[in-house]
Length: 419
Image (tube, rainbow, N blue to C red; front, side, top):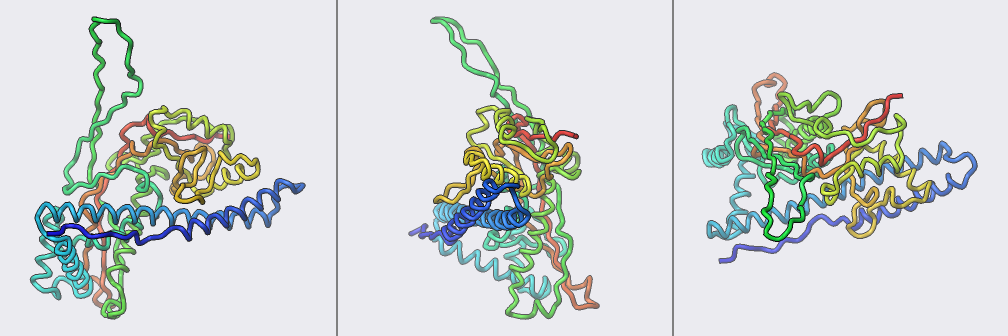
């Protein structure tokens, strides 16, 4: 019995990478002209550079999302093949079961609990029970076939999920997760026949909860849902996951009063430690970024990532191009190589603050030390009763998650000085 099938990468990024190369050439030309012109950057040059930079950032984000989807599709196929081998069935049988579930889910979104068949209801209820998700009020899990939409939305808005360690769990029970920092311990030289000393690992724990986030309700006209040409599954999933993604990333980041860690997820900013204080409040230098990088133990630099928002990155791009120092910022336009700052990749997070008095606008470190815990999948509920006077159907999504930093020495931030 065959348990495997071939998988072809569906998302080609070559065209996007080539387009980024052309944009980078234009940006380099503008920077060179500004450097050679008396008076420096003109207003038109700055406007054009910023326009190109916005396009470049958008393309970079699209490439990152497509790479993530490609990796996920390969992993999903491996999981299906492993399951098929375990239960001794063909991969096609598992795929058929997924298609049946998705069909039932799509029908539920269109006609509600009262309109689906008993068989469809059993499919939805049994899947929810398997993931310990309540079905009170008719809430069911989004099909795994639609998870590409979820992953794309969650990765697109913010950036925290793109680099952090993700821990999926079936239930929402609190978890005590171990933490350890052994970077100060090292081997010692001893003489022959000398007893070795003990140096125990010092473990701590951090508790992961399951805080519930709501997308808030969206209303869809019943006429639109009944239109067979309207893809209600993709529309509802996209709208609800986009809201969840925007809201949770604020907490994962920890700016603006979010992510305190008290009765809510802990943001990375609130768990990390300070590695550098800037000399100016609204800008930075390559030297300061190197100081921030050096403040992180080398053990954490092997998989390290920079994180900042678009405006902060734009400052570094201009600095790189006007000083001809390519090590500051290097565009990812060669093959599959990522864009880098001093040789390390970076992630855009628009929830980080602009550089201003006392803000923490730059992060550097190994984001595997930041853990995001997800509980099962997103549950969606539907009601055609709340707004029946206007013949509108209401959808709402719920997501349970938490986040904690595991080792504050592994990620550090630069604080902008107060002037």
